[in-house]
Length: 545
Ligand code: NAD
Image (cartoon, rainbow, N blue to C red):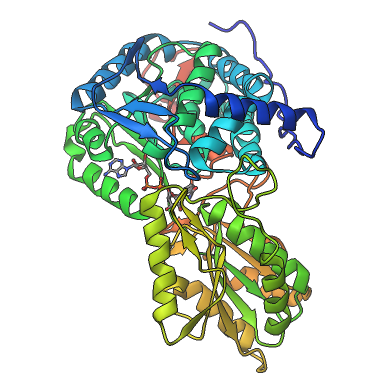
């Protein structure tokens, strides 16, 4: 029991290091990369309570930029392993849920400090190797965003606990923020190490126990996350990492009486399927499960005729092609005014020609490989489709080479059809489609905003470039529901924890805003306690007299 009201250290965003030539962080990261690349293949177990479990069903872990290189193997589990993970979680709940929140916070604050210093190079190198990020993309994700999530969440938890109701004379009202009754299932995507760590951690911070299933293509860095949590003192069983086929895990979890919540980030189709399954099994559960899902996007960039050309070009290149467009927030459809398009097109083509592509081992490479064969084939399919179409033209990139790694050049498609396939569907790769609108009429900009709002089922991120304040105001109003994260004169990617709470609506998710107190509220079930300090002793009210 706590003998005090405690203040979590005020969180400050972890500084992004430069990795410029000659810096100590560059040297440390290159050394960590070489060590991990050259060491004998590692074996990643499942973390099921105190047990470290391997099976005979081994899956190879290979860098996206070099699919012939085996970094190690992880074990595929069965339904029995998922059951073991749930049992371990429910056993751990007896102690963890009763631990003072300041102790839970301390574990994750320690994990943040481990990430920031002793594990920084290792978790960044693991992210470069397993997800194919360049050093900067790894740094802003695995080191900075992950540490930020853990530190800001601890601070938000304190603020939530401090929210207490009023009390009238003679009574004391209190609100307790209880963890959910049961266990939380966290399912994470390949593309952000920080998201993978945060989804189980934020639920655990609020007193929940978790079964966590990472993506098959992120297990190599997921294992570093578990190593850090262990070193930070997270008790066994609080977060159980099970590696198996998604439906195998779902088949056990979604039929379990103690299933209390789903914390999902991934594609829209998978999330819809999981929600339906939960709905079908509703009578099986003790409580109504919390369902939190952050899903796909078809993120837009709109330029007004008053926009600054170089600002638009930079926003498009960074927004569409960093991490090969494999960000849920990546710009993938652009609406450019005909009056500016020749200048934007020329500058963009010239800049794209300077981007180098290759392994993240070479720090001069801006572009690296896409995650796996399935992604490569899917992305190439969209490029092939554009090459064959009569209403579209590939105006930059388009080359694909999977001989060593899964490399796709940053590709720009120009289309005369605002509903062209690649203007509408999420591709999740380095492909940007541009529609040029006629801006010679008075209502042209307003009309294109209506088009942006109605073209896609998603509403995650979007950006508008303009130097005209009335145009920005019009765009903010007309696109009110088109994006959960809306950018003015900046690229639509790169949300920072504590600064731009992240999430979208419509087909893009439940918009529970990772990196804000709003997300933490989904993992507690408040109990109101009313205590009469002076209890009434006579049933008769004055009016009866
Ligand atoms: P994905 O949907 O293929 O996989 C996500 C996770 O779900 C993986 O762990 C996968 O194994 C699991 N899964 C798949 N089918 C399952 C099933 N039937 N039952 C249980 N689990 C199942 O997504 P991905 O390719 O890893 O990530 C890319 C997607 O994630 C994109 O659509 C992207 O927009 C989205 N994303 C969204 C956000 C956001 O904040 N909105 C952030 C990152 C990624």
